[in-house]
Length: 177
Image 1 (cartoon, one colour):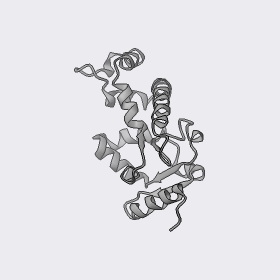
Image 2 (cartoon, one colour; image 1 turned 180 degrees about the vertical axis):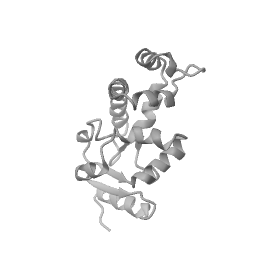
Image 3 (cartoon, one colour; image 1 turned 30 degrees about the horizontal axis):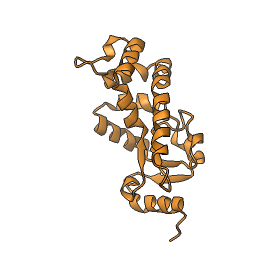
C-alpha cells in the first residue's frame, strides 16, 4: 500500500531470494548444506533448505551470515539511489531478530494473530502449518516487538488497512488532517 502512495519499498525477503539464486551464493549454500539442497534444475530447493535450517539454529545462523550482509549492502545502494524521496521503506520479516531495527529512523510493525499469519503463509508458500511454525519459533514474539515499534498497523482481517496506512504515511510526511 505504501508503494501505491509513491513510497519506494524494498523487500528484504525478495532480495534474499534473489541472492540465494546467484551462482556464487548457490555454490556456498551447497557447500554449507550439501547437494541435497539443489533441485534437478540446479537451483536451491528453498523448501528443502528451509526444512534443514529451521530445524537447526546453527544452520540458520550460517545461512543468515551469508545472505544478510548481501541484502544490507544492496539496501544501502538502493537507498542512495532514492535520496529525493521523503522516506523509503524496507519490508523485512525478521527486522528485530536480525538486529537491524536500530539502523532505521522509524519502525512500522504490521501485526496479525498467529493463526491468521500461519494461514496466510501456508497459502502463499504452499507449505504445511508445521513448516510455518518452525519459522515462527525463530521469530521474536509480536508482543516483544510492539514496544520497539514507532507505528502499528493491524492486519487482522477486521480493522481497515487503508486508513491505518494513510495515517502512518501522513505522520511520516508531517501532515495533519
